[in-house]
Image (cartoon, rainbow, N blue to C red; front, side, top):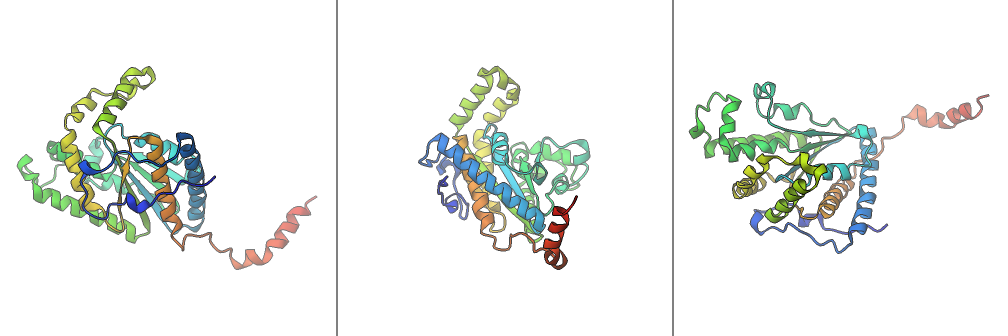
Length: 295
């Protein structure tokens, strides 16, 4: 099947952006059925590429997913990585830090689960929660017991400047060590979030996904958008770019994410199957004959 062409640079953040002026929908000029079929093709190719990367053992891939509640992170993980070898991709979702995690620096729990070379690691909610949720609710920072933070007043602009610097340095170090980083912001409209929350309330099998806290956070929509915009603009770097993904339509968002990953990784000319060592190469025919001649 022919792929649906997109220009991945249309989604990459290379200049300052305004979320308010960004599209939350995108027309692939294809039916849902065609989009789903195109995704099947790309995710299968991604799975095959991961097999090659595992055999080579040269690069790791870190996929970071951020977005407002209901932006489609969970279903994207399910659909995009469906054709991967189960051992080739590991997904982590970062919730409220535990007591153990709070006893360490805020990046510690993320370091622990970084992907090894040859594998994909998916962060469903990421280290950016530490400059998003905590920025909307700065009181959470006090739970980190940072020696220099005595009160909310200490969680000031200088504090956030330093934290962004730390995150940029963290990602630069990963990239320089062989991790290919993708960061996807699933950008949905406030109206679409409303409809998805209502769906959780209206469908009995979706009730469990709803939390009264979702409505409390929704009231802070504008503040979250402001914090997301600042984070995207400060931390989209050549070695760790952000992609602004229109996410009002889930199948479209899934395809765009998968296509960005495949097109980017395919451009790496040094990602290829390892050479067979000399002894094995010389004796391939001999080994085949031994097996074929077994009684």
